[in-house]
Amino acid sequence: MGFDPPLQSPYKSFMSRDFRRWLADRIVVFDGAMGTVLYSQGVFINRCFDELCVSSPSSVLDVHRSYVNAGVDVIETNTFGATRPKLDQHGFGDRVAEINEAGARLAREAAGEKILVAGAMGPLGVRIEPWGPTSTDEASEFFREQVAALLAGGVDLFSVETFSDLTEIEAAIRAIRGLSDLPIVAQLTIDDDGTSLEGAPPAVFGPRLNGLDVDAIGVNCSVGPAAMLKAVENLIDLVDKPVIAQPNAGKPRVVEDRNFYLCSPEYMATFARRMIRAGARIVGGCCGTTPEHLKAIRRAVRAEEPARRRSTVTVEETESHDDAVEPVPFTQRSRFAKAIAAGTTVVSVEMLPPKGHDLTRNLRGAARLHQTGVDVINIPDGPRASARMSPMAMAVRLENEIGIESLIHYCCRDRNLLGMQSDLLGAHSFGLRNLLVITGDPPKLGDYPDATAVFDVDAIGLTNMVSRLNHGLDVGGNKIGEPTAFCMGVGVDPCYPDLKREIARFEWKVEAGAEYCITQPVFDTEALLSFLEQVKHVRIPVIAGIWPLVSYRNAEFMNNEVPGVNVPAWILERMRGVETREAARYEGTQIAQEMLEQLLPHVQGVQIAAPFGRVETAIDVASVIPKERRTAPPEESD
Image (tube, rainbow, N blue to C red):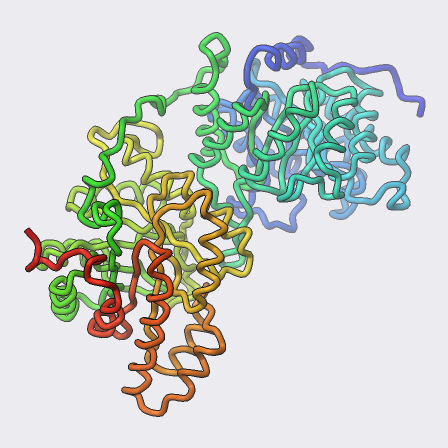
């Protein structure tokens, strides 16, 4: 194509040698997402984020500095989409040089002399031959225009990332090599099964990337850390060049028309450590990751590296996770935990907190349940985003005044990380030990749809947090003194439409430290049994959710308006055929008993709802459990 002789970055050319030396000596940490942080600051998704390098340089500079302060080794320019075809979509196609050079200079200013700057280059957004009208030569010319500007701005290396077409990434690399001999990191984006978005498996794209004139190869974007770890494990055996992995912080969840990525910093750091152990030499983050994620990843990297390979970048760091202590033995945490460990069929009855402050009815019902040997009262946390008394406050009174243990739901919706940790430490100090950690319903489902949600983490991240507390560490890895002794469970939905995804999340929850699980109300027992078979490789005690129906209308509501619940047609027909209200309650109880009897050989216990606060219904359902499998009622205890 007649490329000009290679150019060099005008900024201290020895920095490129640093990168190649780092790859040989230690683990390198790239930064996280630029767009996610800008988006969180109110930049609309339809804006041209690359153009902000010119129109709002301070915003971009602040993001770069936040990653520098997080302790990364390499920051990427805000130029991922700054090629002519992409900029043309926003009317900025004639400003390629201006935007890319400005992006490189901003990153250079933030980086100083110890951090490297990678020129970020993404796909053109147009199809190239043989799948589109753009030739590979034309594609290389588009990339060449961007490369020249990034070099003028002072980059130390190039990050060619989030490509799906191998021909296109080769065109980008050819453009760089026509102008520079600086290091190149080349990354394809993948699907959940590890194949590229064009359908190429690692066995195909790995060797092809390995044969290019680049310094490191790998995968980034599109998937979360679990799927990316599998891709890294596959690539390591197929290539001989250093491997890079930059996963998203999970798949985004849309809440109030905004995208939220729910993988916690701790969770991302856990997988960064696993990727390093699998052989990755470069780790970082992509969409959804923030400076907080990279701080955690940096700590994980330092814990994995020998002392001689520690970074020369100086950042303030909390104590190592190696300070974790052994948790309190499971059987010593609560009577509920002891019953689970003993193999008895534990019985939990769900009791909603009141919408006011009067607990008289709840206390009366709890006393009745305690007399019959129910193990715990399960207290939901703002179910369906409703405003009710604090589950913790209700739990303290039930335990202190009745003597029955509680099992409190704790959801991620309403509190940030600091608030969650404060709540949990406070709950422990009050003597509460049994937790069910859940993500929580978004506010738009509830009584106050205009209320805001936090969702700093999801249930997986919260499981990690509780597990840390049980090991004597806070969310930052600092010692808290004596560890907490929570008996921690998680929710699971065996009838979830995307069962593969639900099983994956269940695996992650178990890996994060979950010790038992409680299902959504189950009406399709065969679905639950099938689910149990599919998760037997990570099996923890399973407590089946049972909901005694009270009417046909109640069955319709559960089937159509409660997320995660599927009422089979045969149950709907049985409830439809009942004429009186009392007969409907009896039929619903009979159905619940039949399901429980079918499930008893396969589960560790049952969580029974008490519709409209009728605890006698729950007691009737539990009566089919053989006495020898139950925990002894208090009057029969030693």
